Length: 160
Image (cartoon, rainbow, N blue to C red; front, side, top):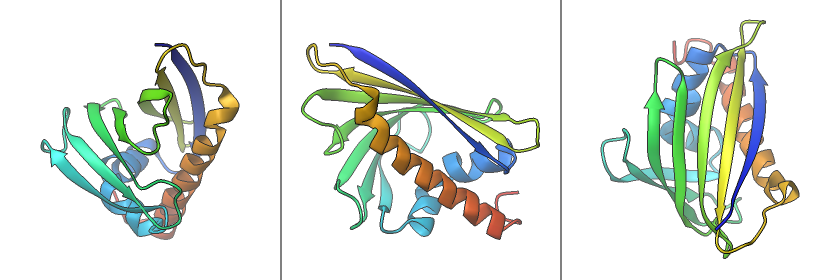
């Protein structure tokens, strides 16, 4: 098994604490609201929403995938970090066993945020994952991020 790691950064004009509340802590409610064709909904299969919780995300009609399950590995509200692992679903291909994500929000000099994501692709066998292969997923994540940001800009009193 190989592990291939990719890093991504997004910037936002939204302060990190507010963005963390919306994009991380309330994502299960907010993302289906702002992107219903992408994400139909999320249900907790096991746990209370904290570390160890297993969630099933059902994608909307606009997605090429049906669902994924992920396990919450860590939530640090003080340091604005979140980690989870994609453990099942049709978004995992025949060659990917799991994908672990580490997300950290930090303040940017302009008062907004920098969202840093590290993705660890755990492959089956000696398969190599190239960055071009994960580019589509990164673009979809960036699109969801921008929808959340637009919601927060349009609703300045939300998530204060």
